Length: 75
Image (cartoon, rainbow, N blue to C red; front, side, top):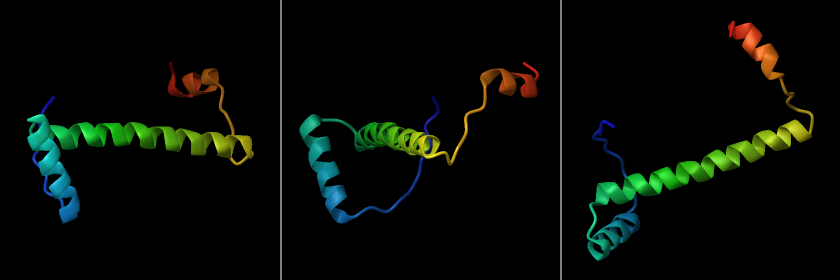
C-alpha cells in the first residue's frame, strides 16, 4: 500500500498524548495515528450500518433484491 503524506491540525493535548504513547511503545507516531484512524473508521462503519438499519426498520428505506440489482447491472 502506498503511503501519502498529509498535514492536519489537532489540539496540543492530542499531540502530547501521541508523543507519550509513541515514546512508551517505541512506535512511530504515523503508525499509531494510522492504526487509530483505522479503528475509528471500523467504529464509524458500524454506526452507519446501525443508522441504515434503523431507517429500514422505520420504513424510511427499502430493500432491493440482489437479483434486481444484478439484472440492472447486467451481471
